[in-house]
Length: 466
Image (cartoon, rainbow, N blue to C red; front, top):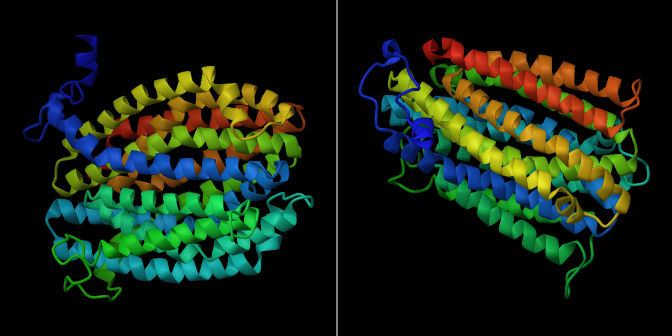
């Protein structure tokens, strides 16, 4: 009885919020599941690829792990503009899908392709030219700087392909086609792992390239993913397709709604990515052992995040579609459905992190100092799981409704200001080291959960028009 009541959708709305017929709990969860499982599996596989990359280069030593890990946040900063663009693409295509406007949806994805191409070529060029300066600023140590620079420069060739793949998949998600994104990323990950095996240590006639091999493998996988996602737009009978007579011009009527959502999302991405970069830079200055441990535990925490991210994609698309269909009541139901599923998943991950923490860290390294420190840091990671998955889904709902301005302000306060400042205070003046960095992470996650929950519960987002 308790489980049935927990899963029921009929207690999610007040009487005055209901605007029409509400589907049964079975139908609501089935719709959410169909949308969510490809995105969640995709996010998990992407995270697993990063984990596998780290494990494989870990055989080259701590320096290799840090050389690869130090590039993560700078690369994501360069992709911030594309990520924000894609938030707008998903929100607008979902609205157009809900409104039954196929032409508008196709105009949106084409505008996204044009903008993504220009942005990605510019950022990739800047990243390649200033690779060394970027990594030094990020806290790279001289002992592994050269490897990091080589890895980062090769990775810049993947940025345009990765960006266009993400943009096309963002549009497909908005129309409910999450399996396309899953297919592209599964294939890309398989290619990446195969070339990791062949090029990192060298097998047969393939050369031993170390961290450069890992970068080449990632770039190859990105090219393959782009090819598959582009193919999804070449089917004449697909809802989104390049044969549809929608035009390739950046008309105001098409670009204005995208920019309305994306501009706030861009501010969010800039604050969030700079905050993450500042956080990683501070941790990098604690010491190589601490930073290696931090990177390993963050990779494991990403496995928790990926499930929340997958559910967030489904919630964002379903919220956007129902807002377009003038059913904000169903948008609320789907948002709360995602929350309940996230709670169940995070409980499972919490148990795995607590009881398997030593074994999990040992997968990446045999360094006893890293394993010992990592076993304690994983307790912090376990405590993060509930807050992280919940706030990610709530923010996905707000983005899907177009309430990106609020998410941007929250990211400024929590990620760009509170987390880095608190990290520095706890790590250095108070001498807590890596424990202080993860304590600051917990505070950040808690703050974002409380504020996003209050915003979602307030319901102002249900009146936003796009």
